Length: 198
Image (cartoon, rainbow, N blue to C red):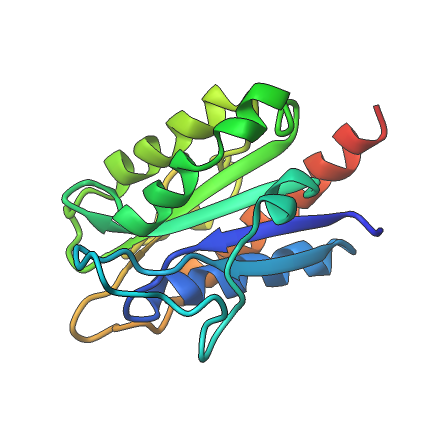
């Protein structure tokens, strides 16, 4: 089985998916496979059933996908300064992987999208980092040596890639955001290669 980086995301309106695809592009430009996976919605209706396979888009993630990855990029839209419930629901199911130390010493990064500039981008990134640190993963942010981190007026943080889904921008990434996504994917792939050789 070839090494791959899992790009795991939840996206309601498409912005977070756009970030995921751009990060995957950076991973693949570095010569590694990017495996895109999503998570199903959660519902408060006790009788509601979610199809095991999504009708459209990327397949749903499995524990095997995350256990066997060489690295992880994980993204969610912001929900009141926190990750969305569907992604948190999946993470809460990964206790068996935590008990086995299955993700220890693997590199990881996070990304998010908000509809307003001060909608909680950095706090959402931090909320997604916490379970990854508990899993023993090695966090891989964005260094300020990437010029677009200084000039972006829409999204970007040393904590991870972000996107501002404003009314004018929508799900379309700005050029700076695309550049930062590609840089994040390349950096994650670089560390995955280095750590897999140890």
